[in-house]
Amino acid sequence: MLKEKPVAFFSHRHAAYCAGLGNFGVNNMLLTPEYGPRVRFTSILTTAELPADPVLGETLCTRCMRCMTVCPVKAIPEGDYPQELTDKKACAARSEELFRRSLSPCGCCIKVCPVGKDRGQYGREDMKMYDDNSPVSVPYRRIQDPCAVLWIEVTGSLRPKKGKRRPPLPLGIMRALLLAWPEGT
Image 1 (cartoon, rainbow, N blue to C red):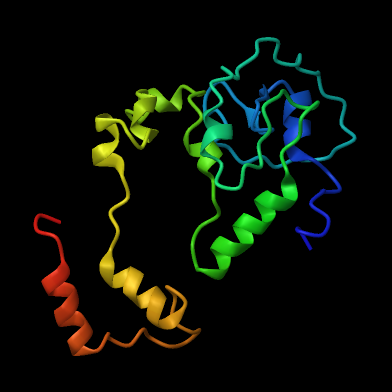
Image 2: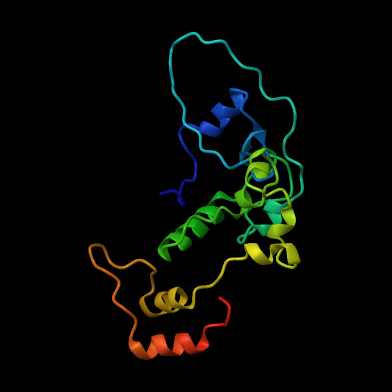
């Protein structure tokens, strides 16, 4: 359903914008001063009369374009929201592909966004950690687990079927993996 009509009846991020919680970045996500795009919103609709907060005046997006560069499906155009919109169908198709392979939703554009005070809290201020060619990124690169990679190639999924345990890999394959395993990992 999301791929055919990637539009919601109610937008929690637009409600958050109107409530003064943040503003939109190049990645079409609501950026907050505290957490950048790394937030989830929910809304409570009421008829109660509440004082309104002003819309956030300062622009939070630094226009570093890391989100656009890192997007694996090139769904983020170079331009400002709302004039340029994320290709929601490409983004949804990517998420569906990852789900089929039992992987998390993409989130690359969220990961590389430098906006948010939380970066300092978690020691993630140096954005070079996300650059593939930077020596700073070496400790942060995902380690490929040959067992998991082989398991996916053999079964087509990282998860076993519902209610079943993952059977062990055949002994010959395990020996080959141990012999091929790089030292120090």
